[in-house]
Length: 591
Image: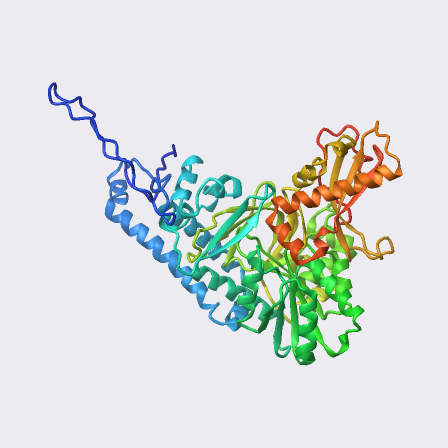
């Protein structure tokens, strides 16, 4: 059970009860067992009440502080304060212009306010969310004023899998009117459903619209071609609704022919913004080039998401597109956690080119180049776990099923805007480059560095590919499995320019397979084995992953998965000697 706290916001000790035996000859009849009436699916299991807030007052002052009247007053003040902060935040989202004003005048004091609001949101959930009450009780939570770290983190495994949707909602009730259910799939193919209420969705749409309007203000009439999937993911539907607040929108899905037809039909009078997965944007460029598209007459921008994008792919696409920017989100949370800006793109390119700046920003010995975004802590308060995994609290009380110190599973780093300015101020060329990059947007929001999934996955065409899925597909053919010693998964450059200095332009999933030392496969047998492995993987992914099956229906490129066979101890397996654990995710061609 939860420990008791001396300073708290809770009730006093429960009333004592004397369990006395019934008088002889006057025993009560045994109770009649009655089945509880079935609860509707919109009502959760009743919670245990606020956790970690009991007290044993010893002085007169403490008795007054923990009295029922003051306790009610404190809780009413907490509710009023949390709602007041959420209401104040909502004011700047009334119009994209107000959102831009907040982003360009953000200060560290706003970050302190955001942390306070995150604490209030967690404590409100302690009072009113049954699943969170049980979660706190299991972790022996003890209430502490203003201490956000006192609340244990949540995750998909420790919280979402263990509690139903209604239990995770305010007051244990799942509101149905206006609620949208989004879906994502895990490694087992089991779908995860994420409920979002009407007011919550309105906030998401305003955030995305505000960020986009800031990035494309003053560029003439905006026409958004939404090429995200309209099927299994939240991104496509919500992107279309959000963009309609600031632009004309056509939801084509990932259909190259429809996009080409749209561009040709409406002509060059618009500023086009194509929203898509990074590989699809590259495919669109190639298709338009093959058709002899007059790029000089049009102005096209790209907004990508769903997976990381290399600078090589960005450079390739920006030979035709005026700009290509990436957004960061998660189905578990929201689609609009952060977005790339001119400043973050400049910084990422400089980290690849300038070792001294790289060390100053990322620290010594860091060879990986993360995606870099700016984010608004007033909406999504971010922290890091001891293992540098990203923890997020959605601070708005409008979130139907609150996300409370939720561990996304991405390895990340946070950098305040003022700290970046201090770093780049150490060199005149750095300061000048940063000033020039931020001159148009002028956002002062903090930086989010994302290294990728900490749970060893790769993302391609919007679908997560897990090593477990690869293993199941490889071993589907018993005869083939007998020849396989190990495997590793990577994203690698596979296009015609691979190896010629162009990196990250045409990346595909590659499964490297190490053959057993006693294999006797000739060249023909090796080709059959590679084909069998590929077919097994594609078949398994199609069966167990709804995301992959959906992407396969919408783009044949999703099936372009390569299998490469290696002799024992060669290729990516050359340095595996003496290692106890296998490496299932190889750095390959990723940056």
